[in-house]
Amino acid sequence: MTQRYGITAPLSGRPFAEQREWIKELEDLGYTDVWTAETDAYDALTPIALASQWTSSLRFGTAIVPVYTHGPAQLASQTASVAEAAPGRVVLGIGSSSNVIVERWNGITFEKPYQRVRDTIRFLRAAMTGEKVVAEYETFTINGFRLGLVPKEPIPIMVAALRPGMLRLAGREGDGAIINWLSPDDVKKVVPYVHEGGPDKEVIARIFVLLTEDADMARGIGRSMISAYLNVPVYAAFHEWLGREELQPMWKAWRDGDRKAAVAAIPDSVVDDLVVHGPADKCREVIEQYIANGVTTSAPMVVSFGDPQEAYRSLARR
Image (cartoon, rainbow, N blue to C red; front, side, top):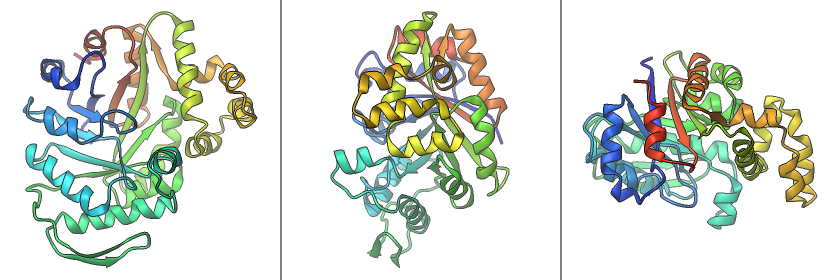
């Protein structure tokens, strides 16, 4: 598979609507992809619709759109709308997200995440052809939806995956997997599950990057990020499966309600494994390790620190 080198947007530092020249420069620097996310700020699809009009060759992907917070028919229409703006340059990344975002933030029951993602893939495959969909899936029923804006070119569907079940689903029914919060060595454990669906399956990695030579500061920021993410049940289960036993003290302190102790319990070694930090040349070397271990598309997420424009320039492969 062709190696791709992306970055996560919107970039920090200014409103996204003012980042036109920044996005255009990514093409000149050799980036192939721009990937978006959807948590508590920008949604995943709106920035793509805007940025796709600023460039002619960049591919745009979502990492990810949660399948609970976007109804099946709505997601089909949204994806087709973005694909019309950039034919052949849009990749849809979907996933279950987490109980925090789905239940606590959106008031939607977080049930049967594997089945919901699987059913959404199957529905989207049918809907994107323009056929009328009448089907009873395990987690929802569609009665007569027909997409009125059929994409001119097929839209790849990637699946956010952590453990074997979802990783296999990504390879079997999706076009590949989106992985994150793992070390370069962890990549070697997860990729084979995706490739059970075929050796040509894409593996996209969101990689958290802090460009600074102040290791203490980077580790302090990294600990805050890790405590916020890896105490979410789906991520805790993922790292237990990976065998990261050194996180047990953090998980215990978090369960006991001692957030300060939980942050302090995270070893430097875990931060160094999961958050890329250091000068630009070192960060590029670590990103290349992810690629060497099976990642086909890297999508660094530059943590808000310093000059974001200089950050993506210094991380460029050219």
